[in-house]
Image 1 (cartoon, one colour):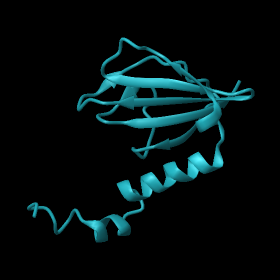
Image 2: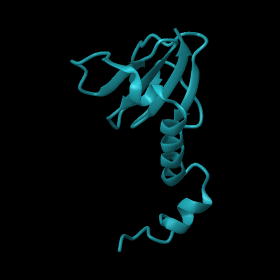
Image 3: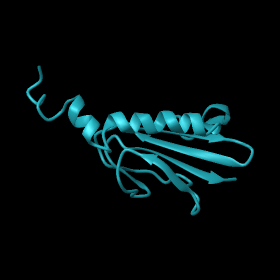
Image 4: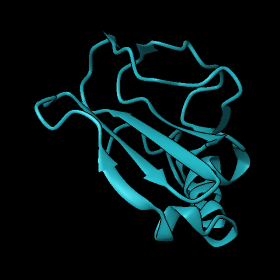
Length: 112
């Protein structure tokens, strides 16, 4: 067993509303609630970026902007996030806008 099994375990995850377990439950629920996730047109934002995977799902009336930092570094990217965009989900509590924290993943929803 890992040395940290007393603090990082299933019981601790179920007791923490911000755990990975509950984050994945929220992602699954979003997929069920928002057809745009599966039916929207896929558009990769910057194919040459090997640190950040960012793309859009584009529907008739709405768009999703999904941004994922796959590094252990703080990064900055200037993606077109409209002022009225709603942050649907993130693995951090607050949104730093252009700054991306290590392994940060966030999804915005906005009207076209």
